[in-house]
Length: 404
Image (cartoon, rainbow, N blue to C red; front, side, top):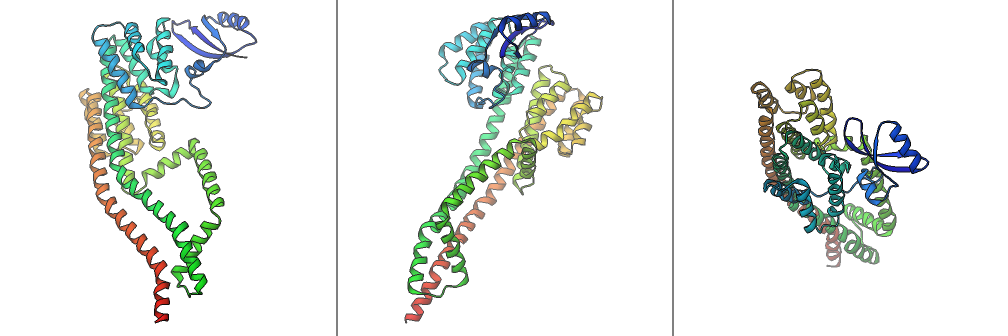
């Protein structure tokens, strides 16, 4: 049987692990024999599965906006002089969110039992950013938890703002694309088949463009069930493939090669890495550990894979700017700025500047992309409508000429 065990390690840490055993007493004796202090042993329940990371299905991540508000309130209470446990109690009294409240209740109980707050959050796996638990650990070591929370809040606010700008900028082109698809679907499944029946009844000779359009529309109307099932199956298979490491890396690499869009996604991924690393270094985390965490926080799998070797190179004593240059994903300007930061001993500050510089490039390139995409989409929609109308009405003009 499987049990969830909260244990005290020989080096003084409190951890929560899964262990196999025949029953609770025998497992307790086995763990004590190994040198652990056993605080609690119980069978996995819903909350325990959450705290174990829910590795089988994956945890539901806390939205950035919601998590940002939580940390702003916590930092304000700590700044006012309240002890950590009292601040968590006060926040739980007013917390009504059904997703966050049970989690925070468990974290509060962990902290009350003597577990570090950073370990309590890290036990929830991917539900919270990995950067967050590392930031908390840095604040606990330095004795400035409130200051480290402020740095993390600034990081989260900047990342959230950048994502909102990109999403809002792409909203209008996305609406145009969906309208185009909806229009072509209605024309193909409703309008064109009616004209198809009319032309068949009168025995009109159809030009090639009309025959092709009628054939495609007739096939879509007759086989719409098969097409729908095929699209659903294809989508599910694609989702399964994307969940694999190879699939995710291949897809993210393809995204970076999309004209105009790829350069934006590339710079946004580098900005994520630089800002995470700057936040950790400013909290006193060593460069190797900070780089390991920052690389894991990059959303693009291809960029993440290219940056992973830099960790070992830094561990071997190579200058950090050389390891970034070897990754072949950083721009020359960013590498030069990191080199200056290393030379002056202000690497965290320079990484923040690099991230700001990349964010400015993302915003500029996004606006430039929109200035090109919007008229292109409008022209494309106009051409599609023109081709559809010509294909439908061209035989009618021929019939009217014959009648005359």
